[in-house]
Length: 116
Length: 114
Image 1 (tube, rainbow over the protein chains, first blue to last red):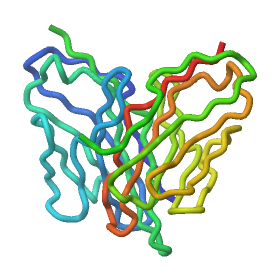
Image 2: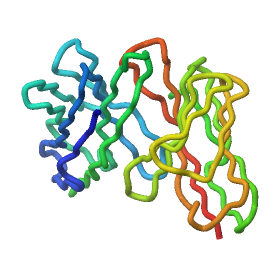
Image 3: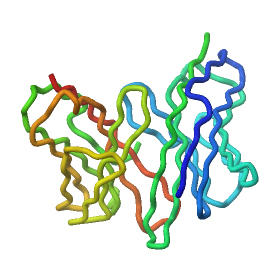
Image 4: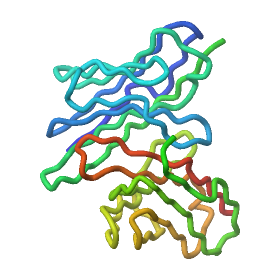
């Protein structure tokens, strides 16, 4: 069985400072991992994904994440926060089962607040 | 922008009414999902489909029903709306044939039952 733990429900950073959103996962197989962002009253937008290629993944809007198998982590980072980054962020793990079907498991989300 | 659309975006309706939330995608994806999300909370899978004539219940029990008569269309129906159904409903789709592909989400329907 797979699971996702987002270690912080709420993160506040000042504009221009680094962002770190933490995600740990467990998976029986080689997982795919995703980060999605959700702005208020909007759907989810894909930020980046890891699918067993390079362990450091670059996404949109300056975000990146590093897959660390030994630590079962997939933390999201950005060097310098912008006011427009304020949103809810979801870490998602996907497993491709023996039957070829994919199951997505969502974390509980991290609300990112940017302080002017 | 993902080619997946939900209508309506916002709906306020009285208790006991029947409602259908529409979801359509133009990407030819076989797999489609419905998630329920309360404000500021995580997403809960309530229904999914592997393709035409396939529907499955998700992890969270729901009084809603779904149908999949066409690949591109995955409507969700509530026969008799109640205030406890007030929530945001998100539709998504993904390509079953590609391992590790992401799910594409619609903008969501925010339902309020009064």
